[in-house]
Image 1 (cartoon, rainbow, N blue to C red):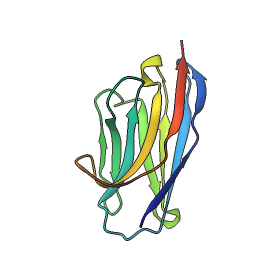
Image 2 (cartoon, helix red, strand yellow):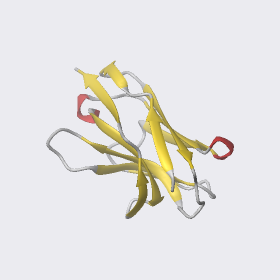
Image 3 (cartoon, one colour):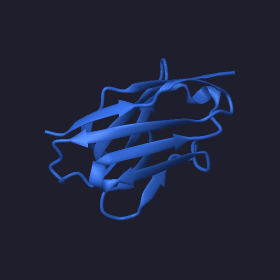
Image 4 (tube, rainbow, N blue to C red):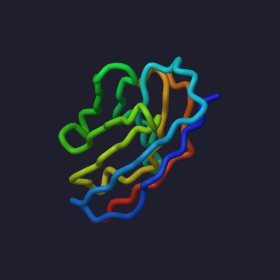
Length: 118
């Protein structure tokens, strides 16, 4: 079973940047892609971005296009999320996920908290 471990969350001022990492272990290579969701306090979990394991395809939610960039290192089974121009509304727990995203999730990470102060 795949296990996902995130890192890189923290507190940042509005306009700042953070980089999240997610390492996948025990991969079965059955999942089509890997990506990120987020859940703000009192809100439902929402899709943020995903990247194909095999192809250079990337997908972004409209709310983060032009500010967030997803990338991967297949040799390390690692996906990165570079977040620039952070806004207070980006404050959330960010979850790494793998599967046929965003519609089907095979595994979740434990989440990492990102807090953006105004």
